[in-house]
Length: 218
Image 1 (tube, rainbow, N blue to C red):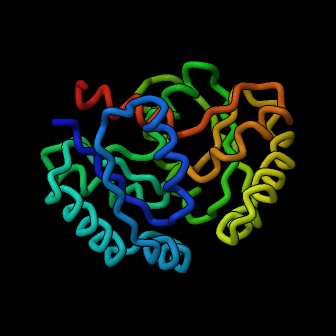
Image 2 (cartoon, rainbow, N blue to C red):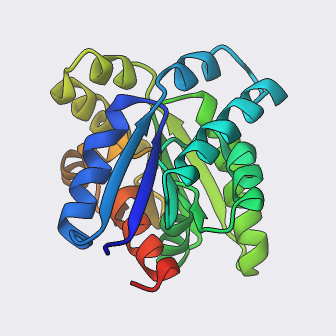
């Protein structure tokens, strides 16, 4: 039987990029999509991730495990502490959205830039990056630029405007060694961003698929 990977989505705009990455890099995997878009709506109303939201997310992930998951991949980057609690409670790999991208970024430089479109995710992603850097033992800096209107455009179905807005902010990070697109949904703008800057541009979905496949041993 194929490996069953359950994808936990907190917004529908993250779904297509990760599905495309699996199709390109691990088509044999059996993908199951779970969506609770209320998670991102309610997360946007909180400055810090509340215990109530953590409990809600962990229950969401446990349901995914009960579906027979061999691995769980979270596609929203605003739930770091909740993902950690979920991972500690389950016997299968649970992967944060950006772990693999962080690793790839550090392999290419020490001055890391990040373009983000969902403000509540920046704090948790910055904490995760700092923890990752400390664990790896390689000093690095993270400079983040928020593109505030891009997510709204994408949620309205206007990917072209989303991509244009993200690419327009990319030159603000052109002095960095490598640039990361913070969210799975932001990966749509990769081509436009690469045309706007001369530094490497990394996206999360493909790196996440490769990392999950390695964790499963498939």
